Length: 206
Image (cartoon, rainbow, N blue to C red; front, side):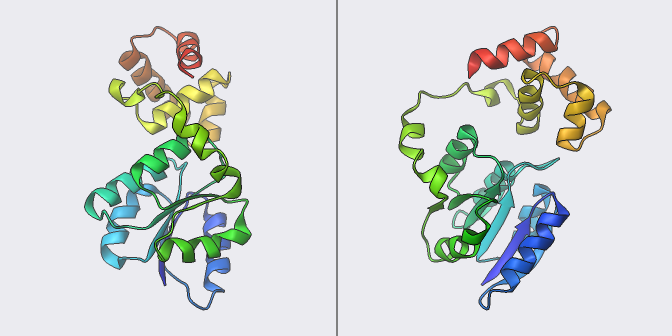
């Protein structure tokens, strides 16, 4: 079974490679540290399963999954994350991802890959119990209608948590200048004046 693994943490990539390549039926054909590599690598290797981290610095896993699925609708994509975030789960379901697994469930990753490869849809135990309620929730605010990207939404969330530009930069592995550029773009797109208004706007849309 041929796999592609993409995660922005090189230590995670190394650890997962060791776990997966210890399986007699698995081979990591390629790996990368940003979602922008997903489509080119998929075209080259045509893997049985593509494993994608969700939060990555430039192109996140959801964006990468959407690009791959647009060109390869039958792609089997398993999203790996440390975040059990309702919004991410809903987007993963709607995108057509075949699985959403918390990295903490490391003992379940290999079985999940086999299940996805066989055509099943796999969600971690903590997540599967929440899916019925999530799908009954009213539609979330459509940030994309305001051209807010996933990375800008990450910045907005952290602003709402009270983090400074420096703290946001550290959290998202960006430079402070890039964070300032994101904030300027966010203010322009949402027609807001300052970061306080951004926080209030975000909290009012949750």
